[in-house]
Length: 277
Image 1 (cartoon, rainbow, N blue to C red):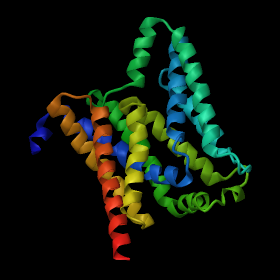
Image 2 (image 1 turned 180 degrees about the horizontal axis):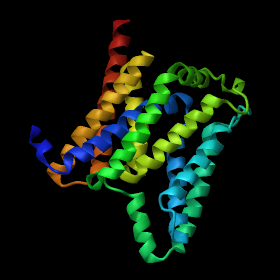
Image 3 (image 1 turned 90 degrees about the vertical axis):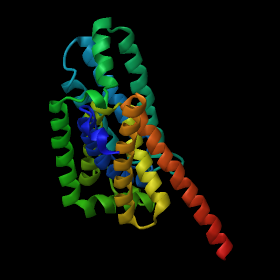
Image 4 (image 1 turned 60 degrees about the vertical axis):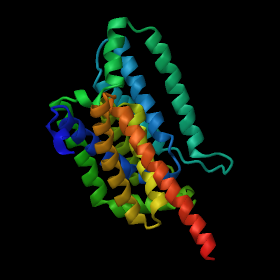
């Protein structure tokens, strides 16, 4: 079982996936609680727009996507819907559609050689993660994690206000809401480089939703989400190496399998609860 650890590509990929999964699954608990699950795809697409623009002008493949993503995160932090007929997700969806359209337009005008480089950045593979990229990922994600550990109660109480429908009391600018979006923006822009948009979205949403199905304890939800992301990373990458699959899709498939098991557990639990009454 453990001979997989002797594979030269496995450990760096596993480290990258676990570091990504732990932070994103924690942030995902906040994202699901706030009802903004589209935010990851939107920020991922804005990052892609930054990559497309950098490829179009021929420079800044690292800095420009970062600037674009942080600008998008800052913009989203100011979204505060007061009209009950509208949801925050709808505005985020418009940003996603707009950035997607601009990305396609820029790609259509990008020279082929630059488009190839852009594709490598957009759909990076975990099995080809470099030591430098892994170290950067660890430093950035550790810094974000420390921020959220130190101010855990601040961030969590804000998420609970969204869950309770009290987000209209936040005001136009809230420093903790601002820092949350900066956190998720930074996490996504660096995670997408090695994982790709869909695996990043899966790390953010699937562990959190699965954990919510398994427990009602708000602290255990975080613990379960992190454990699910670690299990998904390990078994997903193991499957990828043994069956010669791509790392990212294998992790997504494994996380989806865990979600199905959690759903079955939830359904069976509801059935037995009704029968006991």
